[in-house]
Length: 179
Image (cartoon, rainbow, N blue to C red; front, side, top):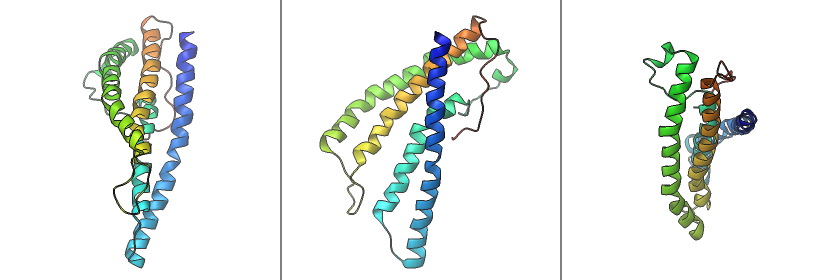
């Protein structure tokens, strides 16, 4: 049952991460358009510039769990590489339990009121011609928290199963990370 839950979370993370990766093309296209408008036509658009920022924030916040799943976050692994798979699983389990999850819970608790206030005001860009969706941008902080907690649960399960020897090696991490 735990393995099935881990597989479901991993599947969700994989599908959402790969879908979100396509936003990179949109972001590059919009950035190209902003540069062309500015330097060839001496004009600009605040909404286009903010769209690039929104896409960048979405890529970063919504794809962090995908990066975690693929072990793509920065790791200071002076000793980690030399550990056995069970040793690595122990480090990952304790790191998830005592670092990742508490930080995510604190971030969610800290940001919830901030995001709720933005929604209550239907906050929009202070710039004339900007996007009226600042509340959605701020909501990405909670998306980050939820997706990282979900993937953290999958990592806890995976590493606990390795430690109790129900799984001798970690799941193969396929594909490239986004961040």
